[in-house]
Length: 497
Image (cartoon, rainbow, N blue to C red):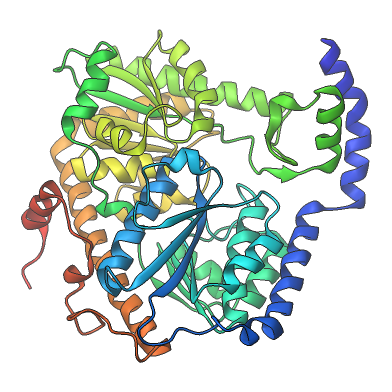
């Protein structure tokens, strides 16, 4: 046992004791709730409180941007494009909160980027005060699986907007299991928000908490990546011959979530360097330990063995793709198991290039929801290996629930091999279903645009919507401009009006 491990072992009891005395997640929630209650009195007294005709509509986008999470950034990019299209290109003054503007340089070009601190309640109170509305835009919007603090942030932004009688919009998000205290926060402060979920299951979760929802979808469907040549160039530089089918694997670290705050670990890390390998940011730490590591090793082994079995009978060029910069710690050990497969991670490859690469693939095995979504417009034959309900819900939507495997399945290797063989043997049928699912979700995204226009019109009767925007309009006209390839896909599969 190393010196650092011995220090960690001796400090752990003190850290655990401190955690029992003060639950930092609950403290954060109470702080956020107190500021929402305060905003009920202070916001209406401010001169910029309400939108007035002739002014641009000031909207704040609150999400998980600035961490090089490709899915989070792609969906927000498309959300901004749709809002500008539906509400008017020149009628909006948009601000987006990001954790690190250096990581989103060149993204969200029509919005002002503002750095968000890790400890956010007072900052959020101040910044929401200056807006006419808030748009919560994180996909994993209402759940404790990754970090209760992230949902506290979403609820805080929406609750502050409600407290000031501002626009309060949750757009295309998902809901899942939440702690009891987080459920109460949602019940109390989101009930008056305009909430569109991306699947039926999320609506049921929120409905049980008294939150009325409308059914929508994710917003990444309209994303237009870089040219095919960009993705092909990346693959060619990594050794691809330009002909062999490409199989992309998008692994994660499914067992180190949720991230939780720990003042004790933060102090111990600062003093001794202990807990550094599980540190996420500030006072937040991943779930860690020998059991977590053992489960991760089994997951990576299952993926590798399944892919190796498949490629014994199928000539494929395998690459490992990290959709978030954190995924490098899963990609590199998986690549080693696959004989040194090339690795592409979002910390080095920006989202336009990364999605272009994914769309050059024939097959995909992904534990990242947006790894699957962003390659579906290209008809990539994808299999999901999931830690929660997001990929399961997507595969149900596609009509292929059997292609959603579980990260902790002891038979993962056999099932990965079988799923890949299935999509290879039934490629035309699977691809047809994937393409039809894309077109169906594009229409739903257009319907979200009509609902958005109606909500803004009802809340702000004098707001000048562009011609044709609103509930009576064609949902397809409420989508941001589509790429030529996506337009061709729609033309092939869209039902005649």
